Image: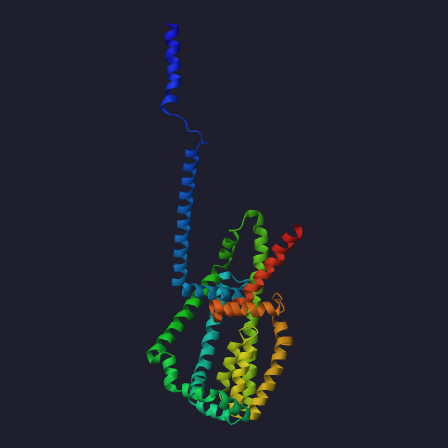
Length: 373
């Protein structure tokens, strides 16, 4: 009887082993199965990654215009934040401070538009209409006439600078109206987004800092606050420098008697916002207009811009931008060129603040880490 029970117990213990035979993980079949599963997982994840990259690229391409508007609004908010912070330090609530700054921007924009638009439109139209006569005046200069005789540049410009060609270049009357409404829509969008960013600046900034690990959050907050401060100082300073350049050019052109002083001064102010090369581009336009007026006016324009650019580079800019991070000239030129290629005029304008942030991050984080290795 005991022998039968022992036999039954042994049968029960051996039965499961007979039903589920174990496979040696070192056998060729097991290794092949693992390789197949590994290849499948890698291929599946790689396919998902490729599809995600394609979808992300498509989404960025389709929403690029909106992303650029958001980027412009963000940098404007960073530039206006010092004014809001200054009002807050005077005891005003943040909402009231943002409202005052927004109203000030609206009043300045409306006042500037009301003052700038009529003469700018009139003088720009007259400049386009009289451009062939200006080119003929340039051709009276012996050096310019010799250059034109060899390369036929002025005659080609005269053939191209007609009202019909300019209208076609602008897309016709309907295209001009659409362009105007497009500009108005973009300006309103940037303005509304700027107000939102200013109102929610503290919350957005703290949310950004929470993306960093808790052990590094204080360091990220310290560096981030300094970067935002530098960027704001740079943007406000650049606007101030461009304003001074435009006003100085306008006063000089009135003294010399060059026509279309207001439109040319606006060209100088806008070009002066472009780092390094912008001031030279604006100066070239004004010098050409000066030589078209008279050789004396052209020489006076050359002398004025040589002297003014020295004054701006060595006196005005260092004083206005003394709170900004010092960036080398080579970094300024390269960043402006790369920004212009990637994002156009907006990229050229924000290139220096971006380089400033990268340089400060390298100085505060990367360099100390490399020194410890």
